[in-house]
Length: 344
Ligand code: XUL
Ligand code: MN
Image (cartoon, rainbow, N blue to C red; front, side, top):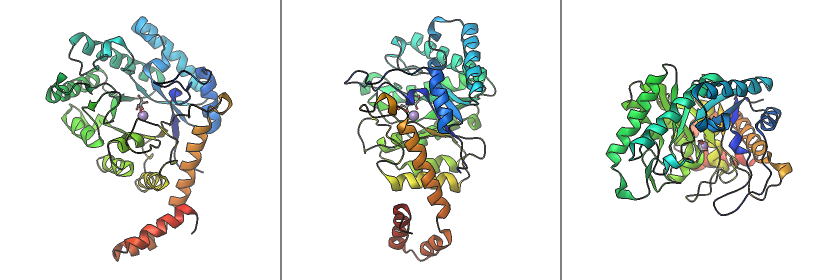
């Protein structure tokens, strides 16, 4: 029995289309996904603004809120909570050059409109968490914008969100690149610096995604630990990634089981979840997966997480601490490996 609550987004069950190939699976409607999420043992759903309210660009503020109330009813029907809402700022013609950091004022205003509407939707869905994955906030051409100006634009945009709603918490999901070349806020360290510069730092934290940390050449468990040390880990996106290449969103633990073990270990040791935080998954099915197996990667990721949680529960801290005191790290490493391999 896990001590954690789990969440996932509707985009984690998708049609298999990628930049170089068309769809390989049939689309699945939101309610069917909710029912299956519940059956698999998830407690909450993560949303992009337009996952919740698909045609929001062509709706009034009141229509958007009304539609979101309908989604809340659907969540209630399956006894699911909403974990967060994230403005999807990377698919619109207005955000060709980014949103909050676009060099065009009208685009920045559009990005703020989506952020405000995301806050409205979050309130209707019953959550106080807004996630910002800053997809196109950076440069494709290094000279196209000043990194100083762009960083200040982000702080200003977050300040406006904090002022718009006194309860909203803003959670930045850092990623060093893709789809842009160089991002402005690429790691958890950047997130904490941005947080400190806002008008209400305690309401600004981070969402650490394993794959994004690996893309930055960093260790996910250490990035999680860094955020935890400052009370800034508002949520996580656990998954896996085969080194520094395109963002793969593989099932949790399938590339590097020891790194996955250490992510679970740092979460357990620091009582993550005690303030209501969810263990979020951001995993993608392989393109070759069939319609019938559309949810397999979610079930697998949950199974790996829970198995590693059991391993952490069995971790012999007395023995480990003795080895640490004597600097016997070869033995400590092998003890950990043996535990993971099921040999102790
Ligand atoms: C993209 C990514 C997003 C965010 C939500 O790399 O991780 O799915 O998690 O906007
Ligand atoms: Mn993510």
